[in-house]
Amino acid sequence: MKKIYIFSKNPHFDMAKVATLFYPEADYPKFSFDINDCIKGLSKSVKLSSNVFIHKTASIGDNCEIGCNSIIGPGVKIGENCLIGDNVSIYFSIIGENVKIYQGVKIGSEGFGFIMNENSFKKIPQLGRVIIGNNVEIGANSTIDRGSIGDTEINDYCMIDNIVHLGHNVKLGQKCVIAAMTGISGSTTIGNNVMIGGQVGISGHLKIGNNVKIAAKTGIMKNIDDNEVIAGYPSEKIFDWHRNTIILKNLRQNDKKMNLILRK
Amino acid sequence: MVDKTFYKNAGPFTLSKISEFLNSKYTGNKEKIISDIAPVDDADQNEICFVSDKYKDIYNKSDAGAFIIKDSKQLTNEKNIYFF
Picture 1 (tube, one colour):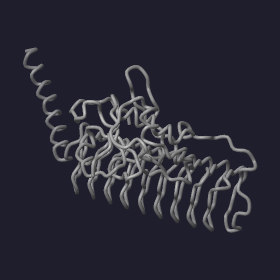
Picture 2 (cartoon, chains in turn purple, cyan):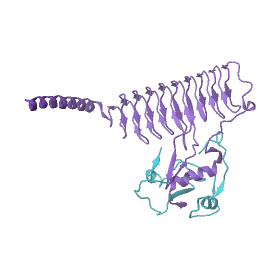
Picture 3 (cartoon, each protein chain N blue to C red):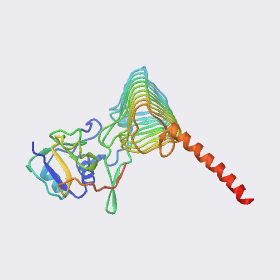
Picture 4 (cartoon, each protein chain N blue to C red):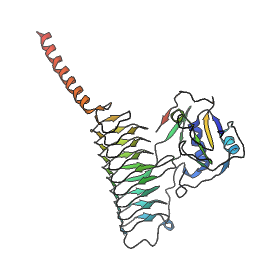
């Protein structure tokens, strides 16, 4: 079949414009709701604290518990037996069963997507969702952006610590563990059983294999194969990284010896 | 494909309407109807997507309704500045 083309100087910029043409309201989402938008007649098994706002188009499964000042936005689906802490806000998300979301978590916030054209920035409308599997735990004050086009996905049995940021269109495999203050940039795909230490930074559009272990403070800028253990900035195999630090240490000690010799 | 429960679609639009909006040239039938936007690897007959250097391998296999493509008709190695 013959392909149809639209010619453009900057395709990405024009795609953002077309997205605003199709979805004029999506440039920035709506946050103002009134009391009539609130849900009525929730199942009695759902425990709600004071000042919770749940939009009338959202659906909450049985036996859920929701803390004070939490907000569940329009269209959000939450499965059974979920625990949602205080000050949580959830937008544009579909959440599975037995999920625990602790205090201050923000799910479905704006992805950091904009494009530069000559002398201005154009925001790329964020039209995706956040899909969270079953038995996931998300620690306090973590933030998960929704996808730009496509979804941000967190699969079953993932454990996420406090203050973790997941960018838009990130895909987490099953049974991943992420320690605090880790940041994962947009469109990075992470395999199953990956363990990530504290303060790890991962660049965008990367593929990280299954069973990878990443030491704390690692900075990742390239794809990682299955079963690797990596550390350091820029990231390398942990064995090489240990060697490098020892070499550096020896270098310094040699330097001290040299200075002593020179002084004599 | 964008989830209609979360986002309201103002479409569909014809190809000529879209290219008029972008102020750019196009090939093919001007009455062609485009109903949604999609990523290049996931787009179907009624959806529009864009092609950049990053996606030049998968775009040949894609059967999207329309592609927004760089002026020169050929995908070059020139890097755009993206922020993600």
